[in-house]
Length: 178
Image (spheres, one colour):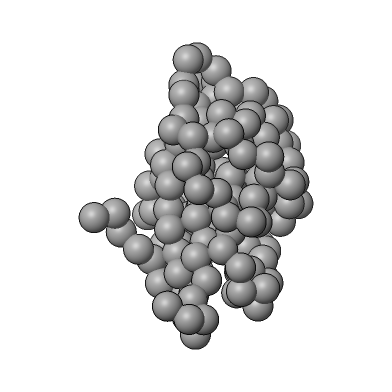
């Protein structure tokens, strides 16, 4: 297909924060998680700057360039905290108000805007991209591709190590696995 851009997003592997229900910090992968190596990687290979994204890229067998736009959602003062340790009204606001940034980090709206800008750059470059990143970034990309409101962000479930494929041909589309 002439003029189509493929964007493959890979969510990083399992971490201690994912297992424990904590807000992530810059932490490594844990356990014996393995990834299927990428057989035919595209020319553009990117990853988020955090250790867990860099390690996942290595497990995929790709030498990815760090892309700051793929950094995880900034949890601010909540980094490393167990979600159950938060006051219930703050956790509720975090999960229901996409503009909430009372934790001193990024709001869902801010992450969605950052990822949307990056996706515009990917579309303009017109080259296939494989990006190893975080569940929050994959969620934001799917919401952007579908033109969904930021309130849909938490309704996208992104498992560790999963791959999400998007195509751009005048507009973004989500390709579901066959």
